[in-house]
Every structure is written in structure tokens, then in C-alpha cells.
Length: 146
Image (cartoon, rainbow, N blue to C red):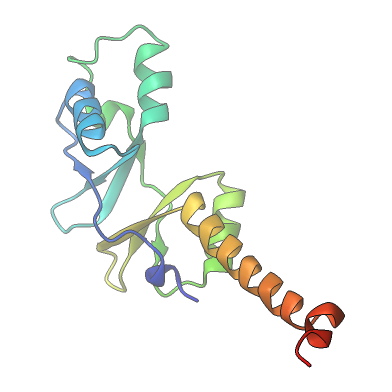
């Protein structure tokens, strides 16, 4: 299965020139922990997380109204193509380490965002289905079919 089948297609964005305070307010209003920053061609050039705000603004005692997203974001985020297998995306996350990755189309334009939680949810659903199959084939269930 490809990343494009499970990624979130509605991605919240940030402008590189906006303040950390404005970005944090958007995260709060939208109940998200990640904002993606795009260039004019709609290609991801940065990613800002709630953790970035905590460590790069609050922990350093910076004024969130005067620090810009461009100063805080992780520049040139490791994006993955929407046709990439989920296993490859998981490997990229583990080697990063990243919890979220922008998903791009074949032209490099933002197509979505995939998180480690998205992948783990899918895997847990698949494991539950395997468990159901195994339980259905167990000797006890076969004996009760008589």
C-alpha cells in the first residue's frame, strides 16, 4: 500500500514570514501539531511542529511575537512521494528520526502529510484482521461450526 492512500490530504500551512505566535495560534485553533511551509511552487520548504515551538522559542525564552516561522522551521524537510510504499516511509521516519513527513506528488508539490500515528493505526488494523483470521481457523472455532 502506498503512502498516498493513508496520508492526510488537508494540511495546515504556515507562511515563513509570520510570527511563531501566529503559527502557534493556528495550531491551537485547528488542533494540529504541525504546519508545513511551502514555496510559491507549492513545494515543501519547511515544517514547524509544536515541539519546535516549545524547544526553540519557549525553552530559550524568546519572544514568540518577534520570532518568525522561517527562523524556527526545519528547513528542507525530508518529503516522500505519495506512491512510496508505507514500509519505505516507515524506514525513512526511523532513520530521520521523524514523526511526520510531507507527502509530495510526482512534481514535488505538496499532496499531504503522513504521521507515524497514521502508519501505526494502519498496522494495528491489519494485525487485528490477522488475529480475527487466526481465531476463525482455531480448533475451537472449527469445532463449533458443526
